[in-house]
Image (tube, rainbow, N blue to C red; front, side, top):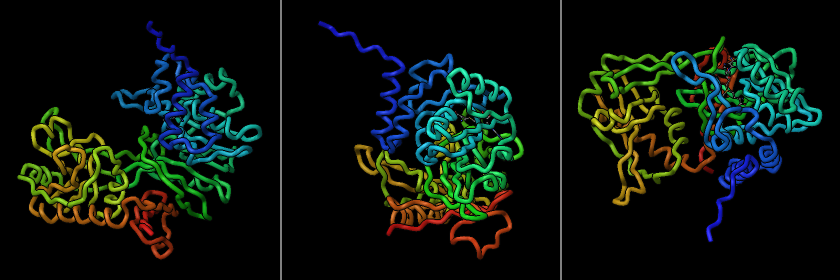
Length: 411
Ligand SMILES: C[S@@+](CC[C@H](N)C(=O)[O-])C[C@H]1O[C@@H](n2cnc3c(N)ncnc32)[C@H](O)[C@@H]1O
């Protein structure tokens, strides 16, 4: 006798989504499990496949620009879950969401109920009219939806206990800190030295101190705070492009680096190994902190197949640029089963060996001093804060802030 497979309903898919997010540790608190288990997602992504709506990893793009780049989406459930964990919205709080979709605002509204308030702001009137309609239809008429540039916060509804930014931010505009209560919190996908992390921050007077961070990717911010990375190509054969992603006014000698990439590489290996599935995003954050001249090398799979570079990633791999020389992080199998990989670096250019050696030195420092440790701590101080008031560590100067990244080390 054959049994029919159980039919998947929104309820069973929602329960499975929450179970998966609990099992891998993304959802840690009962309130957030209960909220994500109760609130239907499908009303906020009408027309999407129900399996996609409840796939924890899948964002549903709701708007693209003229070049096809996603500019608005309902974020993946995993991202929403860890941002809710980071934000910890509590009953009675006044919360601002920057970047609207409706779905995340509905979760926030549930978590601050019965007497809290949620305001969601988006720069795009098409997004806000859609969010308004979907929130009303789902019974969240009390969520305020505002059309404005979120870089300026929403002063008419401030002060906020919590600001959650759901769009990639290159900086923390002063309005966000100013509109927070004295012990208020911000959760923000912050891009620092080319890497984006969802950073949870608590206000401490005129500055913010991080309490944790998670790896994430978001559509870029538009409006007054817009500041996108730009790509310079070092190899531009169609389909085999290799480039550098430059952030925050980074300058490189493109002609010299194009010539360098055409030269044979020098490899330096670290002796440090990682498992094939092991996340190494904290290694990348360490390299971005420790290396002067840090940038990201991107390449297509075809460029790697052709041997132009040894690593291909659309987001880029950690790279150090010194004048007309560059060196990037790569791996090679550490055993015959190809389950472990040794980290190393390929250098190109006149000082290839030295640059690759510099990167490998920092891989070893990470392995010995930071691997499995507490990770980095971020602080965000107003621009103009003197150096002697900043904690030790890398200082990244932005338009409005001086962001510091410190590594307390393993105890
Ligand atoms: C990933 S979507 C938001 C997802 C949403 N929070 C959800 O429920 O999943 C990012 C949104 O940020 C918006 N955005 C971009 N720049 C902005 C700005 N300066 N102020 C407010 N919203 C902005 C975009 O229009 C887009 O709708």
